[in-house]
Image (cartoon, rainbow, N blue to C red; front, top):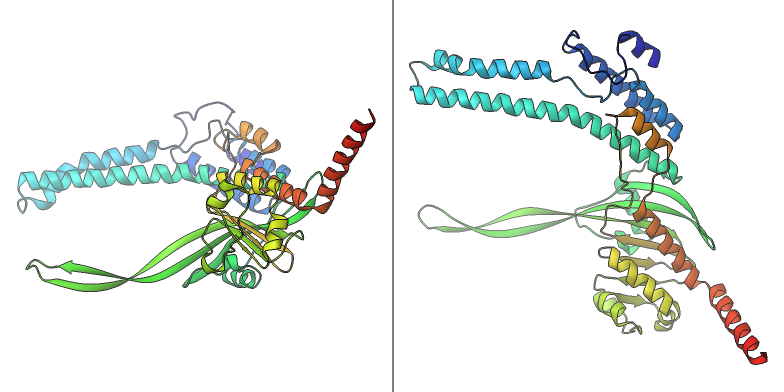
Length: 381
């Protein structure tokens, strides 16, 4: 594919602007074809090396890579110049001069809007493809796999396991499911990251008033859309418990922790209060409270089957900060070759790891053993 691109544009040299001798439109056609090939190879990519190879298909184009809008600008200028005499010819003497002028100005404005729209469309084609490449690189760097799912069927499946997904009276769907593995210093676990979308339908009543002051009661159907994000994973250290920023109402427990900050923000629902007291130790309370400071409407649902659904409103878990783009392929390739840092994902996984660590009985035993050794050593010195 790269050799074909070279044959089409053998005279192009890197870092050289498109010269006036180029046929207007030929550059855009070649660039559009090259971007289509980049997109195809990106969709098939299995590693960062594949993504770098896809970006390399643009090596024959001069940087910065961009569409040539000179022909588009000339067409728009020509259309604008012709708008006034054309309006006068078509509408004379039907319209007055002022009306003809306004019609012509409307035509010029329409041409201008088309110009802006088309230029933005061309620019977005580069931006969106750059975002896709960077996103796939992030997945590769973290060993994540984007799993194809049937949105509604997957939501129904998760509803059978977690109350978290029993939302929405009109629509429920899992729009994205990504599988991964986290290897911590003391615990390792597999997880699924999800994007859950649900819709509530409600009937709204409103009053209208006509020109004669008569009122009429009307109804309309309103659809409220909501999105939740989070993780599902195995968690064996507690069961049948829910900790949520959303008030759990009648089903919440009367048990209160020793942390005022925790009690103000979270409700606790547990099968037995003794289980809540056992799990929500001071270090766990601190971790949950700190995580709640960073996340919106955080919810932890522990099932009887030993699973955890950790969910929240924030949508930036897999959002990385892209420095370069296809506009500068050389710099973009270097960025893709490096490691992308997803700070929100790191923070979420580290929180789950610490939750396991502080809930593990071995952690308490090790802490007690260290304390006992310290006391013993102090008493003999």
